Image (tube, rainbow, N blue to C red; front, top):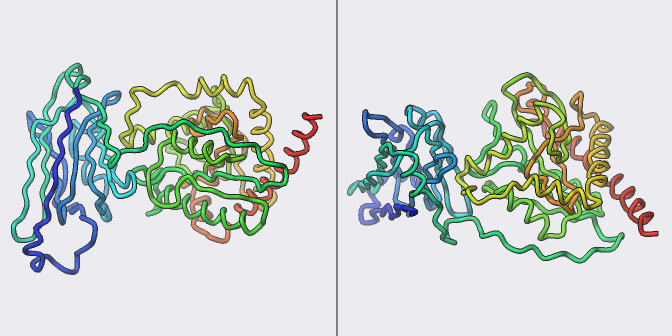
Length: 406
């Protein structure tokens, strides 16, 4: 049985004049110096201090054990993850935007914990709020019985919808490209030197869209055009629903083991081309888990997709797309990875009928790539390379498909 704790942190408007006007914002702010997680012998306490009140809810998820705390949108600026890493019972903490108007905080639990008490205090003078959650250890069976995600259209991602088959467009129609800026919202992706992958990739996706639109012959869509979380399943569904001709997921990851440099293009494969690619795919696919998505009823999508790919013409078209993108980026100067074409089981590449690739345009763990990624002139250069690769692929793909029809 799902246990959901919900309420409203009520802002005290009667004394609004007493609130520090300098810090006033339309959004409630999390005050990091007065927030944190602490353990006692029998309990774990999450303390959150907010500048004003917002609606909230709390629930737990299993496999793995997680506690999810949703708020009507709050401002997390200045809050670092290490502010919440003082507990032996909580493995890691993630927070940020979730869906428009709502924020989420996810505690990855090192052991099963149940919410024993929710204590809300409102300061009568400042209107600020303190929300304290007292968690107690429970056995795994009890935790699993009470853990599940509530459904509320105001708070949650949309329910999966049937995708209508888009009518095939003629050869003279613009190439419809779905650009997928990796990560977003509560999921920052890789972080280095004050930069986050989610922000860099959104910037690059907008720049690439401009390059493609200016070139002509392209119809460009984005899976997200702001800092919001989009699940892997929804990214693919958006491409299918829009009738995209190609799907290009954009990333700039960071590797903790070894060094990787330069742009790399990935295609879907059950067996990764190398160990590093397998680890990268595993890390990418963990974004839904870390963001508090309920995955308990998810299917093994990669296996299903590979079966679909075996009975379609998509795989050879995807291979050609990846090769043309590698060539295009290399010809504009790259730099390219020493093995620029690789494969792995990325769930975001699961469309059976849309040629889909994932481009790591660089690695934040590489000082050279980090410098390039921060340089608008270099990003324009790599965007031109992607544009050239798409144009070559489009021309050759139309010729090949026309040949097959004869």
